[in-house]
Image (cartoon, rainbow, N blue to C red; front, side, top):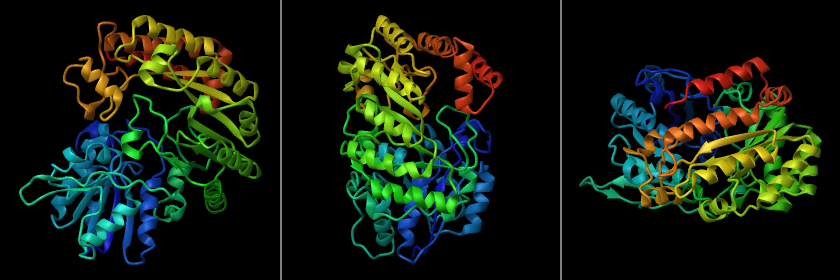
Length: 479
């Protein structure tokens, strides 16, 4: 019988430093919202003892992780892995757990599991792999293991008695996100997340303690490089404004938060809902930031309301500076003149604006890449980010790169190189992209002392510290 459940985030640094490694190379600063939401759902049954172990936040070594599992003596361990690049750490965590006691039931969930259920279930240290959203699937799986349900829930993958993969498909998409409780942050030391952010970045907290908010799932748009369609579907599934403001009120009153970060890409997709949220935020007077914003959904009235409600930073997704690449390759419904107008208005409202661009698509010419850089400079945002196109599995970008024989030799989605990219064509190499990306990023963003000061202030560091970051970025190029 499953009575004690432990939900785990492995230490992703294990991938960086080897099995016993405990380096601090990975500086993600995310709050384990999804695990705590799953825990809250399970707690509603009033029958399980539940613990959360975030080995990344605690920077546990493999030995320390093993001891924590021994101390907890769980019946079931659910492991969540963020992306393919960290997949090794999930396998290692499961191996450690099975070494302690082969009778401990293990399940893998998260983005990595959803993107690769068939390959992950071949690891016999995983008893189950969960493909899709877990709020309904995980409780049903526990009921199945306990003999209270006759069939495996949809989305759960297993190996049959002959060692063949038994596909559970993808779990059904949850349409009513308001039905779930607030995340069980009482199971973690919340201050360990809300009072620190090791990675110094523009989209870091504006003040401490802070909270991160997810307001929706799924994306109705169809950008070629994005895995969201595979993971969460193309149906936009929002939480209501009332539900979101209830969570913010709880965070303010329970944890004393002083700033917010909205993490999802679709805060603006339902304009009426966005207006309700922004109006509701006014009373809290919290500075807030918005990540990966759809520029084509912004307008002057909305931007003014955002500023009134406390917005201090917006990261707009532009992606390309050429219409052909934007519409024929990426399939993003954005007009470049709209990006210019939105950027100008955001700056007029004293909202710091960063703009994201992606270069190095299969079929993109060198001149089009240069045009994107020229447009990024002409846009006159406070900051531009230049990313290499990365062909993640189950994306149209991956399919295009494969069809055009543009994947680098020995391409491995589990070892993605975000700095250099993993696409090469007759037009460019990964070396070309690495050099161009870093030096143009440096040239455009730090051309004046005024720009450097404004960016350093947004990052919460000195100009001298910013200059060190620039220097390290240039000197760690992999050529």
